[in-house]
Amino acid sequence: MSTAFDILDRLIAFPSVSRDGNIDLIRYVADFLETNGIQSRLYPSETGDRANLFATVGPEGPGGIVLSGHTDVVPVDGQDWTRDPFRMSEADGRLYGRGTTDMKGFVACAMEAMVAAKTQPLSRPLHIALSYDEEIGCVGVRPMLAELSKAGLKPDWVLVGEPTSMQVAAGHKGKTGAHATCCGIAAHSALAPTGLNAIHLAADFLKDIRALQGELEETGSRDDDYDIPYTTVHAGIIHGGTALNIVPDHCKLSFEIRNIASDDPKVLLDRLFESAGRISAKARERFPKAGIDIEIFNEYPGLDTSSGGTAVSNALSLSRTNRAIKVAFGTEGGLFTSTLGVPAVVCGPGSMEQGHKPDEFVTRDQMEACRAMLGRVSDQLAA
Image (cartoon, rainbow, N blue to C red):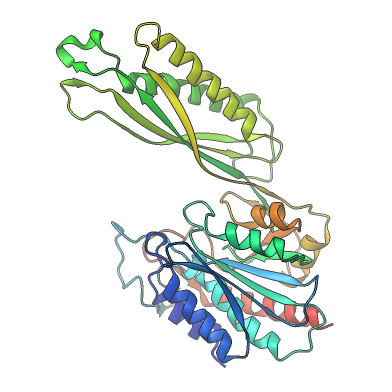
């Protein structure tokens, strides 16, 4: 049987960057599972260049565990790699390649675990769910989850294998991404006061974003399980203007909210919509067509699984750890919980400190720890 290391070598060779699709990788996974007697179902995108995959071993029916992972990776453009990012290499116990940590290492271990579980007399099912376009906002998994919900899938819990150094994570923040499009009035820069500078509108709105962030930091709700224990509001991209001698009539500012469970992102968004409305109303006193429009382009829920629940206690036992943590990055775990109504935890090999960087790697020791944990998952389901 192919080991997780053999499988990882093959997975890394597929340059499944989100923008390019993952269909070749998914077909490899489907063929691999079929060769080992496991039938899978694909959920292709409308474009056909990417797909989700779902497969089950063991008896049909409720219960069991879902092993969840995404198959897309971030680009390598502009990164200073010292080795081929799409050819796995090893040195000093480190396995290098794009996606080794985030998160093809876990996917490889999960594929191996499915094949091993096929040979065991499972009393409850073991599922694998692989998705596309996670890196651009947990986009691809949603249609698959909708179909699985309609089909009545109800596992006991979901294990999302994002890199946590094999620590069990019971929570992460939710995320809302939005664009603020600022419309001004163009003019020659020599006559700047006769126009309305869209960049200035964006600056006024950005001032209110920063004020909200300051308020959240100083007096907002707290969850000390996070490194940053409060909700954050962050402006990440701003584009405006075409030439220095033109008063710009358009500026686009992109921002995000990453909220702890006790903060409702809709309430914070309402604050920012009110801010945009106030700035717009003032601008329209002179320029009726001016204003700021806010568009939400992506959002996913946070994860807040009870540390006293069976999912966390099972995961701690299986991973041989004794305390659940919370992680700064987002995952698909909250979508599994909100769509299927089941708890989810996050635990996988590697550290996110290595993810998205040049010379990304996962250690052999982390892979072995994951293989051992997933072996115990199968044993538990066979008990």
